[in-house]
Image (tube, rainbow, N blue to C red):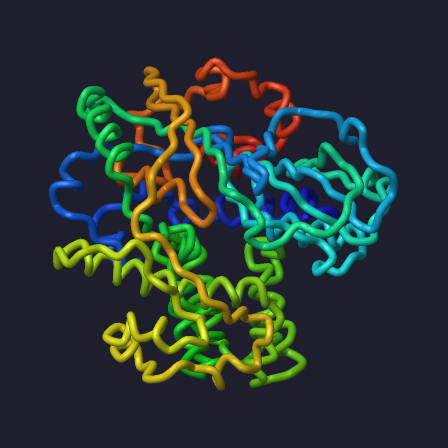
Length: 472
């Protein structure tokens, strides 16, 4: 069964649950206020918090466009091109293609593509993970894949363009950065002059390069804790929390599901039945539970079933430490270093930067032994800049909000920049913002994205919509 059919089946089940008890599905507007940011290690100076305005992101997927910039400076655009690249080279071992997607993450896209092709995911390479709730473009490489086979791939969530043969492969981190075109929807408290003053200051001084909320796993924002538990060798605790801990921004319905899983923890067959109606929402949980159903209490083996996710958890804990350290520098007034190293380096000096925080978290030495079972965890030295400059290509204030086009180096979050200008909101849209669909590229005088919107029309919807209504 294709993903779109599985998703439809999942939504239909949830529509039935919604009809029984709508109160369990109430959606709230979530504000990234100081209290929320502090939970992911981010703490701004008070004066910065006072000079920002409410801003809502991703009301429509086309409000957030991400286009990958390769090492040679070329941009993988979302513009609609032919399937085959003009002047495509003769057949070679590697097939290259630009992936345009909407409504699923890069990892989810690879899951679907590899399943369709009956291909090992290791044969599919990409430079970086792109947003799920957006329209994005990125280069991918496929080892040993025929063009004719790629032509058979069909999904409402993605398509390929500029397909051609070449040498080598796309490497993780093998990009210069990303170009963003974003609509931040504002309300009547927005002050144009003060906003323009703030953005000029940031263009001159740069912004604090925090890891923002998507690094920590929306809507739960606790994946860093699972990474910490694994580092402490507490594999069962990590597994239990992953399956059972209620997320900060999950609906009450799914909080109750996790409560039920906790009640039956250890009865893996029962838990499989609980998760069965949610093959996409709980796809990673099902992989872990299915393994435990056959191998009870082998929590290391269970965690190995989701290597990409587990690696993100470890990175999330390192990101939390980085945020806490950067916040500490900001508030103490100590000279801000240009870069701060991340953990997951074999160099003890890179860990010593965080000694105080690590001791609080019960890590007294580099946890080589605790991470040894997971060979896919990459140990390498990496330093992250504490402040970044912003390259703004275009800015236009429209009645619905602010349209911004800008580029950032790899590893930088657009939201890390935007949170210096707006108090970002997500979830249920506030009533005082416009629901109008905007062609944000056309608003900036660029080529319209209408062709792309038509392509993704079956899966594009506003956050104001109740997806269950169509099942009435």
